[in-house]
Image 1 (cartoon, each protein chain N blue to C red):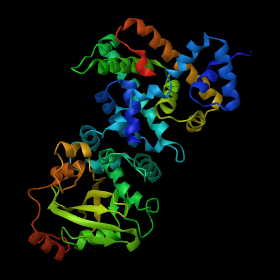
Image 2 (cartoon, helix red, strand yellow):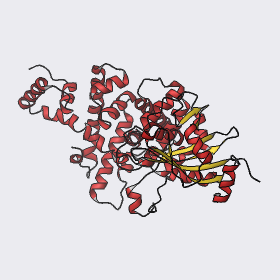
Image 3 (cartoon, rainbow over the protein chains, first blue to last red):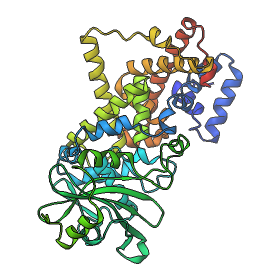
Image 4 (cartoon, chains in turn green, purple):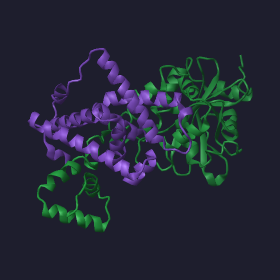
Length: 275
Length: 165
């Protein structure tokens, strides 16, 4: 009988061989009891080995990691963006890798690590990403910052908080709901919003108005309906939010959120200070 | 892929906290060196490599500082958990410390094939290697891993190889 190499045995253990080769190995194993030990070397270290380290696949990415990736300051999401040289191709790839369209079981927290990048998750789901020049883009990458597209910009410009606004083509089923308006520590006006799409995914984010009248997306992440957190009663019923967005708002906000009258006045005044 | 990156980091560090530090470092480095990534190539293996480099840097720094990474001490980490959990931890720290010692090319293949479940063909495409090279490296890695495990079986009495199979 010809020599059976380690590589062949390993391939057999991994189920990589076709029928004929598989039978050849089986014959060899049957005729040489000592070979079982050699085989064990590979069955022990195969995919079962991988299961040893599976814990991260079963749990949410911890807040600590999200925070450290986010950085300590409210503006750090932007800082993270600036770290990435202007290479949209890389960001697109990162987005696709980290936030695939069919995310299935993955916890929302897992989607939020690189928040601004994560922001694109919402856009990706809408199949508009990668098409940054199209007017239908929900957001575009401008000089390393994510800027709300025309549709979302219009909602953030003019819609009072708590109103649900359908945007884009009706068939897309995308709605944007501003949820909170506030002034940031750097003086700009910002609005927290929720974005949902046809497939029922919910995202939350914060846009801040720039001097040129655009809404810059500072944070955007998928909202979790984390079963484990709910069991512990951490996520209040009826209020779904992203811890990443919440903590970003906490860091960014100056004083309290704006009341509805102040918000109305700012909307009427096109977000120029009314004082 | 973030959970997968975390799992790969976990296999190197053998400790979740350290794995998270490593993932964080990896993300920062990846963003900073985005220019080096070639569009059209796989991002996961690229980031795994960054994770490996970061981990080697950390281990080197630890050695310079004179910290000793004691496998036996790590294996004695005992919680209030049941025996199975302790055994699981021992196995885990053994495997990850052995994995850490492997050449990076082999380590990466163990990550892609044994952890992520890529086929040899997929791994070969991911790393742009001939399939024969993938198989010989992987076989070498796993026989080293298995020999290390066997010799440790005698050392650690509570170690239960059955957990692995």
